[in-house]
Amino acid sequence: KNDKTMRDDEEKSSDWIELLVSAPSATTVNLSGWSLTDDPEHKEVWPFPSHDIAVSKDGFLVVYASGEEDDEEETKGKEKRDKSKAIDVLKPLKPLHASFKLSDKGDYLAVLDAEGKVADAIKRYPQQYKDISWGRTNGRVKTLSDLTLSGGATYAYLSRPTPGKANAGPVADNTPLISGVTKTTEAPLTTGEDLTVRACVSILSQRESQKEQSKTILFENAKVELHYKVNFESRDYASEMKPVENGTHCDEDEGQKEFASVVRHHKFSGPAGTHPGDMIRWYVTVQRGSLAARSPSLEVEDPAESAADIPRYFGS
Image 1 (cartoon, one colour):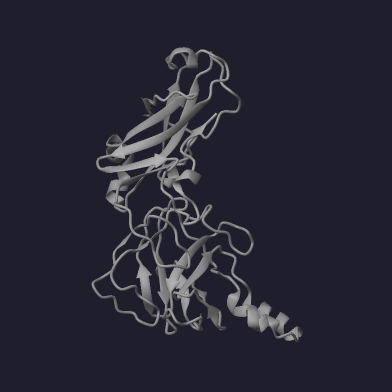
Image 2 (tube, rainbow, N blue to C red; image 1 turned 180 degrees about the vertical axis):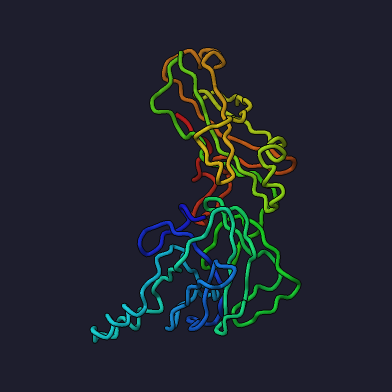
């Protein structure tokens, strides 16, 4: 589910599908007659354009599942009226938009060859989360020109999205995910004000049987904590974040559960907690067995950044 990973050519955060369609040495591929579909009966399909399509240096192709496909016939008509060959040169670079959108809750997805046969298919992908990719993790990756898997492929949520590149490594099933943490307060706190920090917690589980029980079994085993500092004290404080029933801060349809903790003014230590305008900094952790998550994350994902460049806290 794309949110901030990338923008399409219309500056929209459309969901995307990545395919490995050619050998790494190729720069273009022609998929005329091939199609994508989210219809298990294959009655409604989105055909690839008849012209050549540019692929990444590793042979990957990204298709936006925006539901806003281009009218190829209309495009052809415009080209006939335009004598410039620049359009033909740029055509392979034009982003592709499928005629359907992906369901966040999981759905069918297939690639059909020129004869309408299934070249590759996922019977049902699991719940999708914002900016968390899901895909193949091992086995020889299936391409549209080489349809035999060796060793079989497994699927998992991936450690980071990599559109147009090889998939990143997998994360363990049932790994916790934190989002929607209260990032700041509207104004500096006074000594008489409490601070409520909220967070949305998800469990990245591919098992449908576990998803049905997610509100009980999965979250009961998760320890959610708020960690905070007051001004420049060296001491870290911690308080348990408790589940919020019927909360409105998180989206349950996306598999999220709301947790909250209230930092009361009388719990601030010594002089640091007795003056108006105290600076409070915080982060949230989830521990579920050996699996853990922190927000803000301390992982450096951008090669151009270092650990010193990423924020360690939210706060006032």
